[in-house]
Amino acid sequence: MNSTLFDAYVADEKKIEPKDWMPDAYRKTLVRQISQHAHSEVVGMLPEANWISRAPSLKRKAILMAKVQDEAGHGLYLYSAAETLGVEREDLYLDLLEGKAKYSSIFNYPTQSWADIGAIGWLVDGAAIMNQVPLCKCSYGPYARAMVRVCKEESFHQRQGFQIMLVMTEGSAEQKAMAQDAMNRWWWPALMMFGPPDGDSPNSAQSMKWNIKRFSNDELRQKFVDMTVPQAELIGLTVPDADLKWNEQTGHYDFGEIDWSEFKRVIKGGGPCNVQRLAACNKAWNDGTWVRQAATAYAEKKSSNATR
Ligand code: BYC
Image 1 (cartoon, helix red, strand yellow):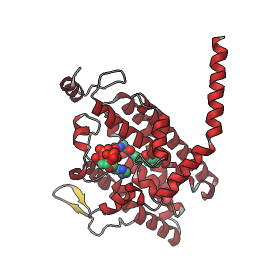
Image 2: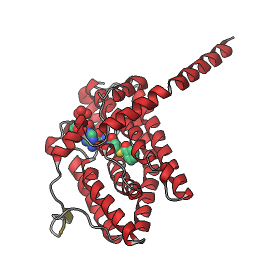
Image 3: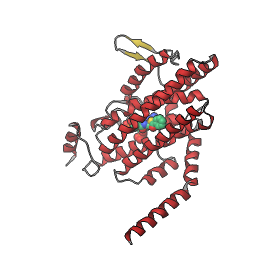
Image 4: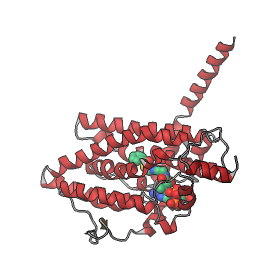
């Protein structure tokens, strides 16, 4: 295979598998995207885990624990998918711990109230699904297959978040105000999850040509707005955007300008919780050293017993 044949092969909707020939740049962009995605799943556990001990009922606690555990599982499928490209999970993870690797901007915001757990499930997982369903058709087989299961689980997460918001908006005036406050704080960061506008997205054109990305950042952002605004109306929440309006001609919602300076600041490490998130990941890694050592020693013992 060469680059021309490869391009024709992926354009024909065929899947690339780990042992197939692939251009170095294709491998590199996949390692970049899949590892950033894995890191996002792992760091994404932190804002929600903050509320496990304070969930308002045993049922909510059990649901939240299951959701957070799902995110850990997504991280594992994704690190495994990245490893099929010839990289080591530990190297990828050390890049995260050292602050060299990116993860989704959204997880650098704090979870201030229980309603934030609803807003994360509804808006953040909702945005994640919008972005990830097309990835089930990505040209790289292991990533596409990992995404199928991830999306099934994300869809449960989205519904549980919406249900939290629904219950709160039907509750006391104070509970409704909490839901609105969470909506106000999470709406714009959720729109930023889709990445920079198409004109400022250096990776999009090539990734779309290779069928890694199937829709552009702006297309997915628009789909998310169109899907979510009617849901907000249904539960009586106001989208915090004075410029939001239905456009009869385009058949889409027009929406206001995103503060891209905030996005840039957050991905450069200057968001409200960046320092805290990396500190938590480093602490977990250091506290878990003995577990990794014990697991390695056990695996070595088992394999030496097997060869005797
Ligand atoms: N945050 O050229 P672009 C989840 C970076 S969901 C931070 O458009 P690309 C979860 C981008 O990496 C969240 N960085 O890039 C949900 C690039 O930097 P580098 C994770 C961002 O890759 C609920 C630069 O900006 N989802 O995990 O073509 C609970 C230029 O951007 C962001 C995924 O990762 C951002 N929001 O498109 C728990 C989905 N946006 O690498 C967990 C898979 C952009 O050149 N990833 N950047 O230094 C993708 O679909 C794509 O990578 C993106 C960006 C659409 C995110």
